[in-house]
Amino acid sequence: MQLLQTRAELLHWCETPAQRTVPLHFVPTMGALHRGHSSLVEVAGRPVAGSAPRVLVSVFVNPLQFGPGEDFSCYPRPLEADERVASEAGADALFRPSVEELFPGGEGQLTRLSPPRELQEVLCGRHRPGHFDGVATVVARLLGLVRPERLLLGEKDWQQLVILRRLVADLGLPLRVQGCATVREGDGLACSSRNRYLSALERLRARALPQALAAAREPLMVSADGSAPVLLATVRTALERAELEVEYVELLQPHSLTPLTRLSGLGLLAAAVRCGSCRLIDHTILMTRQPLVAIDGPAGAGKSTVTRAFAARLGLVYLDTGAMYRALTWWVRRQGVDPADGTAIEPLLKGLDLKLTTATVGEQRVSLNGHDVTEAIRSPEVTGQVSLVAAHACVRTALTRQQQAMGERGGLVAEGRDIGTAVFPDADLKVFLTATVAERARRRALDLERRGFAVPPLVELQQQIAGRDHADASREVAPLRQAPDAVELITDGLAIEGVIQALVDLFRERVPEEAWPEAS
Ligand code: PAF
Image (cartoon, rainbow, N blue to C red; front, side, top):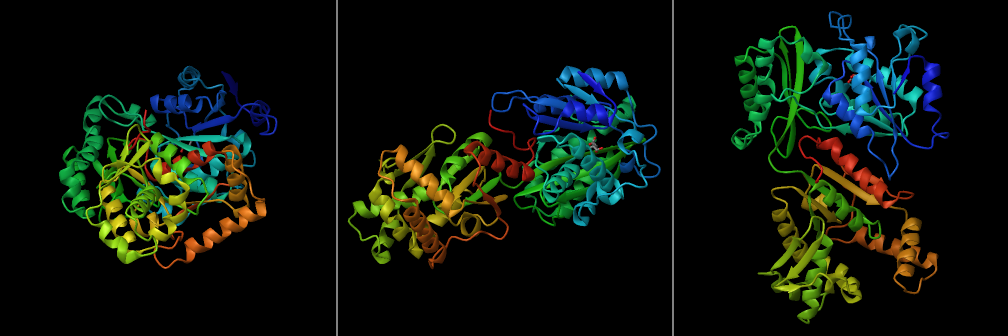
C-alpha cells in the first residue's frame, strides 16, 4: 500500500479519469480505523465487471467539521494502526495530508459548501451547527482532487450519507455513492472511532443505545398506533434508565429526513446520547410493512427485464401487473367475450382465480382458474387486445384491489402503468422508467431482428410507439402518468446492468442495507 501525503503525490497516483485503466474507488475517513472502515475498503475493492478497482483511503481529521468545545485536538490519530488496518483491508493507497496541504490557502479563505437547511435542521445537524457544512466542504475538496468513479460511505452516519448523496447529485459529479451496512461489535454497539474513549463501565451502559432502538422494532411497539411521540418517549425512557444523556431521539422519513408524526411504511428512528465524555449515535429502520417499490413507464422502456433482475437482487417479490391484465385478456378470449364490452367482462371478474407465483426469486408463473397461462399470455392475439380489456373501469378496480392485497405486507416490487399513482401511492420508491421514442424504436428493431421477424423502417416504429404513448396517456381510466413523487429514470445510453444498478442505488437511498440486505 502506498502512502501519499501531498496533493502532488495524490494527483500522480490517481491519474485523471481519462488515463485510468481501472476504476478508482474512494473511502474518505478521519482515521482511527475500525472494522466498519475495513468493511468499506473491502466492499470498495470488489471487482466491477470482472476487473478489480483501485482503492484509495484518505485519513484527514477535518477541522471544519468540529465545533468549539468538540474533540478536534484530542480526536484519536493512531497513524501506524491506521496504515495496518487500511492495508490489511486491501487499500492500494492511503492519502494522509496535513491541514496545510489540503487547505493551502488557509481555512479562512476557503470556498464553503452549505447543504440544504432542511437536511441539516434535524438529528446531528441541529445539535452540531456548521458540522455538515464542514463535512460537505472537505468531501467536495477531496472528490475534486481524487475524481473517483465511486465514493463509499458508512450507513451508520445516515444523515451524512443523505447529505453527501445530495451534494453529489446537486453538483452533478460523475460518480456513484455507495452506502455500506453499519458494522457492529459483538455487544451490538455500532463500530465508531469514538468507542475507544469509553471506560469498561461506560461500555456496558452504551449497549442500551442499540438495545433501545432494537426494542422499538418489536411488532408490539411499532403497531401500538404508530404514533411517533409514544415511540420516542419509550426509547428516551429506556436510554435514560441506562444513565445515558439523551441529545435527541427522532423519527424521520429516511430519504428526505422529514420528521414523522406517525409511522406508516418505513421510518428512520435515530438517537444520539452522551455516555461519559463520549457522544454516540445510532439508528434503526422501523417498518409497518416491508419495502414497496413501484415502477411505471411507457411500453418498450425495458421495465420487465430490469424489474425482474432488481427484484431478484433485493429479494423482493416481483409483481408484473401487465401479466395480470394479459391473463384476464386470455380468459376473456377463451370465454368468447368481446374484449371491448365491459359489461360482458364484468361477470368474469367474480371469483377470478388469478395467481402469480414466484418459483425461484424473480421468475414468475401465471395461473388463471387452474390453467398455467405463463406462455399463452404472450401470444400476439393477447398482446393485440390487452389494452382494450385493461381500459375498462370494472377491470381496473378488480385487479387494482387484488394487487393491493398482494402488496399489503410489502416486500414487493410492482411494475405497470399506474402502480405509483393508483395501486401503491404510498410506495417507498417510485420510479418512472422511460426512454426516448427514438431509443425505444431502436431497441424494438433489434428485438424483432433477434427474434427473426421482419423489421419495419425505424420511422414507422417510432410512429407506432408515439401513438401507443398517446393512447396510454390519454385514456380515461388509469392513464399513464408519472407520479409527482416518482424519480424519472431515462435509460437512453444505459446498458441493462446500469439501469438495474441505478434502481438499486435509488432503493438504497430509502432503505439501508442493514435493514434490508441484498439477497445472497
Ligand atoms: O465520516 C467521516 O469520517 C467524515 O465525516 C468524512 C466523511 C471523512 C469527512 O471528513
